[in-house]
Length: 265
Image (cartoon, rainbow, N blue to C red):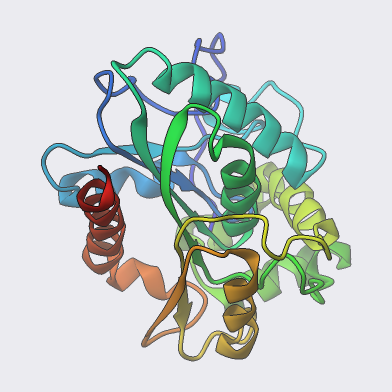
């Protein structure tokens, strides 16, 4: 869940989209990380991305090259800034740029809110893929963010996804505690009873079969946020099932891009 940070540097022009910008017009998969996660979580994914498609990992403030920046205060705040930057980025292309938004855990909420903002606003939003997080109409019941530090880290260890070196070293846990607590807090606060029907693009929900944090029964609620069609895929595993299914997830995202291209006039 947490990955080693680097020293802060001057914020780049593209603060939210990590790495060099794709060539103008390149179809892209924009990936929003989980609570406490960073753009580097998706670094191993780059080698599995199909030719002609760009992987664009999102970098939240308060980590890595954005270490000196304050943490986000809400999911909506992240989505506002990310959508603005994404739309400015794709506007440099020759026309509408195909985009798929993917988000895991807290990132699913970020991806959804970003989708609401970019749909029909200059990017061709081909679809939304949400992983291991309840729908926005379902209140988050976890209170992990309210636990004392030691108990919070114990809970995170049970969730999986956190590097062993972070769990084993008190110095690293102390370093990452503010970021993870800030992310968990805004994730727990996010809920939107009016989210249903706010999208008109395909939504695909991905879930681990034994995920107790985002049970498959709750994941089905994502069907109601769109009028553009819904599908659900389950995988063996828990909250961080995706570690073993990167190629499958990228294939799903690429299929969404391809389907949108085939359907276009």
